[in-house]
Structure formats: structure tokens, C-alpha cells
Image (tube, rainbow, N blue to C red; front, side):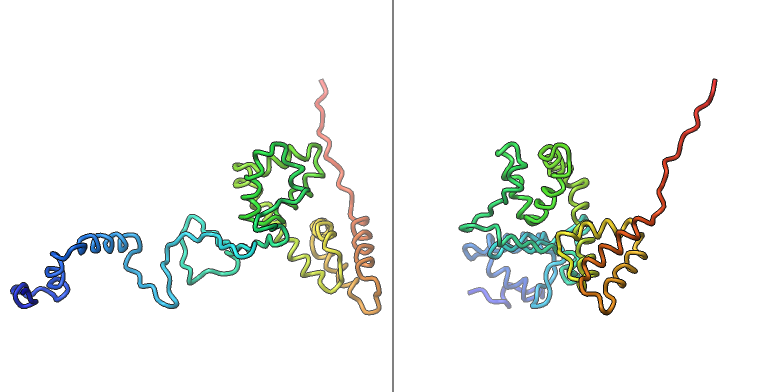
Length: 248
């Protein structure tokens, strides 16, 4: 019978000695190969109750139509330092029917080729139906809505421009909603107020908000709209510069 003493005359560590004993056991070699591969894939990091591997691919988590997606850029970051700014909360609950995602009619009508509906369903799962609805709303302001919609939802255009455009737009809408929380503005008018804020350079817009919030004002949304209109009407007209034409 082999013992640690018999096979360890050179003073090897106990781990090495046990390995020498187990070397002849059936299946041990396969077990060790699996362990080695696992170590190579995961490194030597310890995974405890509050620690996770620092290099992972975070996949979308879908629960009853809701998805919480972590977007990881080119640089891999530790999960220990994830902030809410790196998370995108997707809530498609209203559009789940019998466990399946159903696109709203406003979006479907803009997809000329039904074969591409799966592309739009994927965008809806990854970013939320509200992203597609906002594009559908913007598309109605274009000369050819379906063509514009198809262009901005293409794979290349989405990664190059559309995604960042929508992220910035929803950020501005969220900030405006928070700024006008005490006035009671209908959310459908938020894009108008975002545009007005840009025209009035922010400062004059804030003065309009404070005016609408004054004591004694009964219809604050109406007062805000009126104050904004008056300020915009007072803006100086910017005349286009005329290029001089050289006389012969």
C-alpha cells in the first residue's frame, strides 16, 4: 500500500504527494485537466460572497418582460464598481403577450419588409420598446417616414449614431421632467420644452420656470408656455450672412 512516506522520500509537498497517489485512480487525469482549464479561464481570483470575477461578459437578465442590461465597453471593468449609470433598465411588460414580445402598431407600420421584424424585436429587447416608439414619433416628421426609420435602425447607423442620439435625448427628457416636476406638465410636451430650453440658453428658461412656480399662479403649465413664448418672441432674428459677389 502506498503512503505519503513511501512515495515522498524527496520531501515534496503533501499536495504533490497526494497527486502522485491519485495519479493511478480512474478518472483523476480527466478531473485534473478540467480543473486546469477552469483555472486558465477564470484566473486565480477568489470568488466569495461579495467578490466576483473582474472580467466577465454581462448578459441581459429578463424577468417577466423586464431586462436589466449591463453595457460593458472596450475596457473590462470590475462588477464591484458598477454604478447605475452603466445599467440600462428595460421594461417591456406592456408589450408582452402570452410570453412573447409584440411590437406596437406604430413601429410595425414603418417596417416595409416583414422579414426585418425580428431585427426590431431584438432592438426592443435590448433597448426597450420606448426607443423604437421615439424613433417612430420622429419618423412622422420626415418626408418619407418608413425610409428614414429603416435607415436609423440599420446595424451600422444604430451603432454609429442612433443609439447615442437616443441616449442623449432620453437623458435630456428625464432632466426636463425633473425640472418641471412641480408644474404638472403633460409628458408629451417635454420635447417642446427641451427645444425651448436650448433656444433660451437655459438661463432665461429657468426664469420662466420660476415665474410659473410663483405663488398665486393657478394654471402653471399655461403660464410656463406663455412665458416661454414671450421670451422666444423677444429673441433677435439672426439674418443670414450675404456673400459678396465680385464684379467683373
